[in-house]
Length: 124
Picture 1: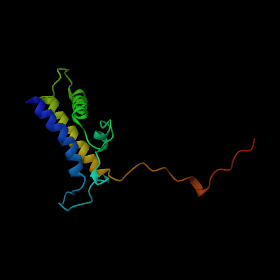
Picture 2 (picture 1 turned 90 degrees about the vertical axis):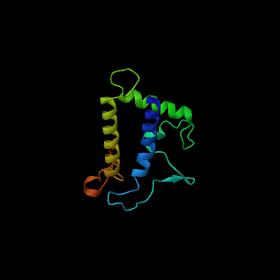
Picture 3 (picture 1 turned 180 degrees about the horizontal axis):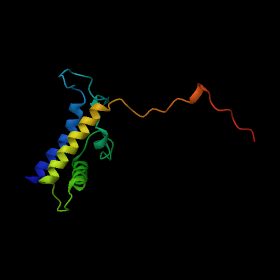
Picture 4 (picture 1 turned 180 degrees about the vertical axis):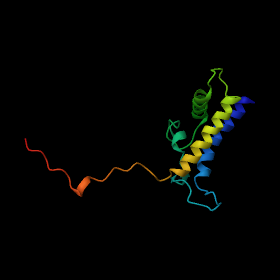
């Protein structure tokens, strides 16, 4: 039962971010996440587990993602995420989705040079 719950949570991490990205709060449909060769890309936090870079997670890659998720949220070290740990995990995932929506398209930009001119090369 616990393994099914953890598998469900890992799947929701993958699907939740993808589906949440293209719906606004008012219910209007926005653009879907980027696709590669007609297939939807994995979100960055899941793509790091895609070792063979085929755009999807095989069973071994899912197991690695699940183990990393358990390691992240298993504070008492019993190999399970339950009770307060599960509540904290759900809160963290909701916060991640909220921040992903809020920060979408707001990448780090380099500041423009002051005065609009490049510094003169030093002669030495």
